Image (cartoon, rainbow, N blue to C red):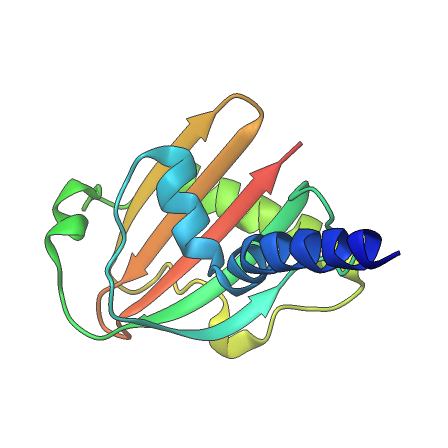
Length: 146
């Protein structure tokens, strides 16, 4: 009986750090790992819209971060506006709003009339759209995994 209790305690002790790390890791750290890229380290999450039942990271996720200062990561972004990018981002926003039956707060929608830089990553069945708005210093992230 004592051995069984000790075994359970050891298993829980080993599992706790793994589960804690998974729960506490910010989504944008997972993006960096999945797409082998870097994002600014000084970001504050302002807004998130994602389905409640995402057990395996499938579906859509929309996040907005305030970026404290310009970093070299933005050197890799496209600086010329793209109607194709705008349409794709808008379509994903429409889709996530329909899935959640909730609209993205107007303060956090992309402002394509303002200056923005963007970057798109595609890997297998996963897509990541990054939109940095220069004036507001907000990074808008749309993640899609089928």
